[in-house]
Amino acid sequence: MKTITLAPAKIIILGEHFCVHGAPALSMAINLYSKVEVEDLNQKKLQIFSENLNVLGEYVEGKFLPVIGGLESRKIVEPIRLAVEATLNMLGEVEKGFKVKVNSKIPVGVGLGSSASIAVSTIMAIAANLGFKLSKEEVCKIAFEAEKYVHFKPSGIDHTTITYGGLILFKEGKLVKQIQPKKDLTFIVGNTGIRRSTGVLVKEVDKLKEEKRSLMVKMLADIEKLVFEGLDALESGNLKFLGEILDKNQEMLSNIGVSHWKLEELIDTARKAGALGAKLTGGGGGGCMICLTEDKDTSRVAEALKKVSKEIYIVKMDKYGVKVLV
Image 1: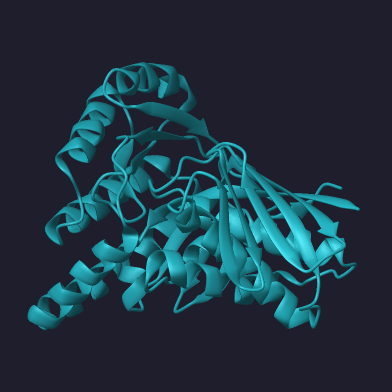
Image 2: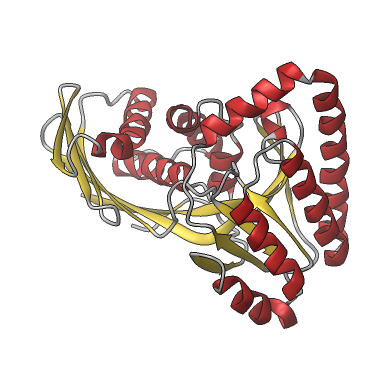
């Protein structure tokens, strides 16, 4: 029996890094996807193949056996193993074996939630293959275990956004509410091509909080104000004001040291080409930036960004989150 699932990528519109420390954040699922195919095996073995990264590994009795990609491939497939095992443990089906095939269109290690998307898609596929229909709350709970391996101290915003889809207000590990923006949103994602570790950057911000506690308290209050102003702008359709808020958030992220000169180049390029606002998204230190555009300006901004980005994506909101296709 084969089961196929699909899960979106995500962008954080406002509040990354600060949400790890209890501040609210706004994030949106976007129309870039990871697809996972699961087939049951008639033996207790887990085989994981990443089609786009060309790695294949097997786990037999807890031992990892690299087939394609050498021992380094374990870093790629280990979060998927954790997602599978956490799902089987929750469902009480620990004696089962599976073949998991991943094909993701989401770039890896650049802040778009690649690992969370694959984990969420895998969890839903394993459960569906066994005849279980998990609630989205249950999917989030399981995905958190896989995300801890990748991100050290995840806020939970990635897998929550990806599981539920749409645009969400997130705070303290939970979805506060799903938001219906008054106007359709168009973002351009610019990829610097510089991979980085979110976990390392989270630790740096932790260190800043310890060394400059009063400054961080003020910044947490400031970002909360910005997030709720952004929420009002989304619900009222004031995209110009939302763009200004993105710019203010970027200034704060630069001040805590998580930006990068290449990110700043892309952000400056987008603004000069007519974007309403621009900022990094995700961990920073490289990775991706996002800019908000009006439809009449999207092509012009995209052409400008193509000259300085490794790649760009013009994205819209995914409304559905993770889903079972077959």
